[in-house]
Image (cartoon, rainbow, N blue to C red; front, side, top):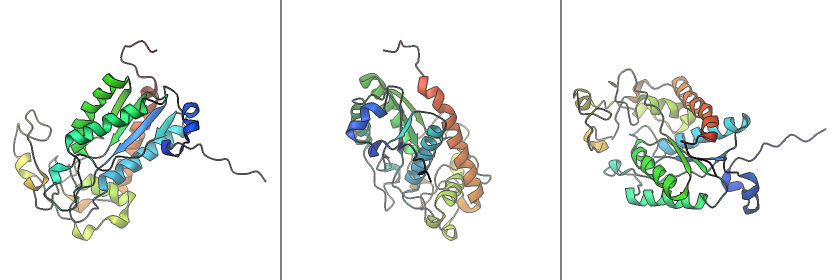
Length: 261
């Protein structure tokens, strides 16, 4: 009877220091999940964004490696830029400058390995702009090829296109990933009608605005979780994972016009 074949370890932090130079190459893709610890209404846990980011990133690495991609999972960043939720209990956040320098320090460290490709898999919208700036900083200072994905928005049918926090999509995904942490009996709609009624000012309009989650509802919810469904969540999860897995071959060779050394 033969022993079962062991799966290749694809977790960066489980490598030994002796394995780094042999396991990684300049075309290895390091995947860094970024989430948050912040309120998601009375029905979802503080770690919602972190749970989603870790699950998506782990699935991308697993499926990508199975397809032959040289991809590795880094430990996640859980404490990030969440100060838009600071007025609600439970939020743990870093200042933008602190998170920026943390990402730069991580990049400096990873640049000491053979790997030169870093993909951020982000599940917290408050991180998106900062990660985009930090990605350029890592490109300039450490010659890393940097990539980031925050995922597409999926507003639900009752959210007027504005389900951006603890609403239909996020609650559906959590019902798929961690139903034990979801309290649907506590789910309450809080649609941002004041934003939806504006024609030019909005979250993604030609004119954007500074906001706090409590501007819209005391719960901090911006959306309608009441119609969330686990099967919908499974579909949304697979859609995001499949898109990122499909992008891995391109990420592995992407070079915007420069001669590689």
